[in-house]
Image 1 (cartoon, rainbow, N blue to C red):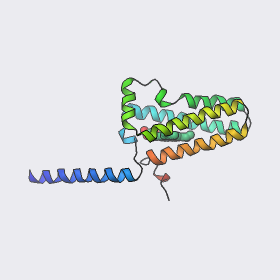
Image 2 (tube, rainbow, N blue to C red):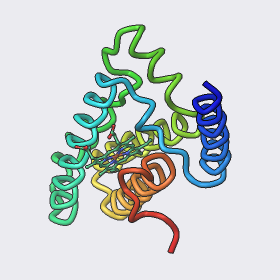
Image 3 (spheres, rainbow, N blue to C red):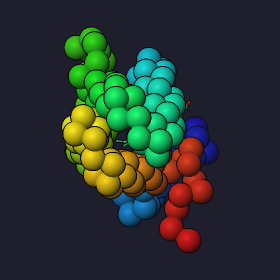
Image 4 (spheres, rainbow, N blue to C red):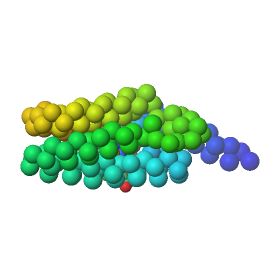
Length: 155
Ligand code: HEC
């Protein structure tokens, strides 16, 4: 009885320690996702990734229409706007901090900008926004997905 109690206290102390460490360093959101949210987000990320690859080649070859279509697709995939049930939305909001929501919004705003730059056939602007979007992937992954993408920590 005494013994298990001690272990219990040690467990609590450890949990408190890792909590304080995680607020100093990056605080991964992935462990807080429900299985369904994980699945949805991973799906969204894979389609974002393939859209980014196809935008890259379309952009450097001046295929503005194709850039616009794919950038629009990224914009529309906005997970917070997807047909999540009310419960999913609650689960998502309780899993992620405000900073995550802001990064997600920024990212999708950049995608909207890229769509516009493609419609006006402005290659320089597409290039700039594309780079900013890449920066956004790195910012979110290094801050909130540090458990899976641990190669992104500061050197
Ligand atoms: C606002 C945060 C955020 C932004 C911005 C973001 N990601 Fe992610 N990404 C995540 C999270 C969270 C995961 C982990 C999901 C999980 O494992 O549950 C992830 C996972 C991934 C994965 C792995 C998917 C899988 O199959 O497990 C890829 C690939 C990826 N992201 C690509 C990108 C690319 C490319 C960009 C930018 C163009 C990007 N992400 C921008 C949050 C973000």
